[in-house]
Amino acid sequence: MFRTFIIFLSCLSLLACSTYSPVQRTSPNSYALAIKPGDQVSLSTINGQTFELKVTRISQDILTGVDDNGHSEIIKISDIQELEKKSISAAKTSGGILAVVVIVCVTALALVARTLSSAGK
Image (tube, rainbow, N blue to C red; front, side):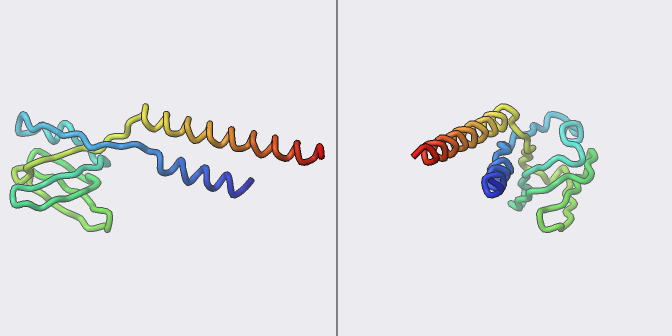
């Protein structure tokens, strides 16, 4: 039973369905309005560098963030060619969790039925 619970939790941790959505730069401060500290972003610069960062600070001129390795990056807004913000799809995540719950319930019922049929012999 404990092993099933651990497998269930492992599946749940993998189910957060997320996507990156483009952030359009329509004005000088549009990035600062659309992105907040704590947001996860993917960006490419005009010189070809790419970054995936957790934003720690953003202003009209500068985006500061930390990558998965803990390295801090400071990027001029004027150097950003493309910016995408990570968002979690609640519908996809809920659907995935529901599917796992159904699978666990069906598996548990099958085990109970097998145990009961074995006990009746």
